[in-house]
Image (cartoon, rainbow, N blue to C red; front, side, top):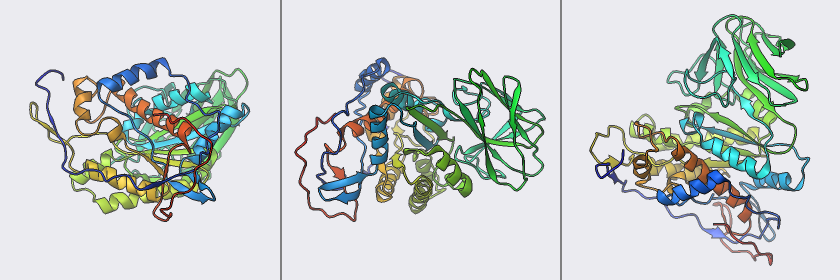
Length: 461
């Protein structure tokens, strides 16, 4: 919708608190850290951000460990150190990012932009975690098998809990016919991994390359989540995952290269919130995150929480409790990882009528505040996507520019790209600026400042 008749946003009366006190930290970054060259798309999106009054923002990066001269380790240090390795050591292993979240990332381009911007600066190491079929009968196949048939998707976002718990993808696919198949086009990966659920009576899954069988699963029918790894022949073109009978369950397929570079696993699920992520099976969460060995746990949450607060289907204590539980579980399963929570975008209340003013969702700001406080208390960074896209009224500006779907909930087109750009910009600026700007202190830290290093660094806005 465009023009003078477009609805006006009425902001909520609540406001976010000021940032926590900060203290000086030593300049820890290495001299080689510098922003990668701006991609052509990023240049266009920066111009669009100016038009839409989307200022972007910085990640809040709390100090987790004090050293003699100041902060020795912050929430994002493991990720930033991994990026250093990609710059300094060409033979380094891939740097994996595990991105959990809701529909904001599940079927759109936000994390695609984050992935592609980081790959442009640090190289890519393959696709990572993929699904044997789509999560719904529509949408693209960028993160799934190229061709599939005979599978029923079940997700943790369903209103009623499905019969089986989930691995880290938050999705499993159930074979509904004999010879259900997913076919993946290979891109030179040397090996792969099949994640599957060992349920009673399901039969075997067959892994084939270009028509030749590589391996078959050997079910024990004990309900466990299992892993089957396989080597891929050089020059192989197509990988098939085939169910010998009905009832077989596939949780995901991992295809990744050995060399250095970025891998971003998209683990978002429509309708998900921190409460529903409790449906992840503990053994699968531990085993699969250990296999992935992420250097950044990234959580895009808050949109469904604010909606369910408005509907009185949850309350703020539950939102806080369940987000804290999710962060603790994920960090315990990946103790060497950094952690960052990305808050929700701007949102308006349900029941808007055509020609009437749009009213900001009543609990949006409260949900952002709760997420920020929990993230920092749990040793994670926080990025305020709502503020980065322009705060109250920003959804109206996106809508007037044609970048919102009719539901006024989900962005589309360049609106999605812009949100991905502000996240990737914040991550890259945080890496370049680490040690050049104050780090947030946690509640347990002393308020006294420490002496700064004599080394200097230019701060990237």
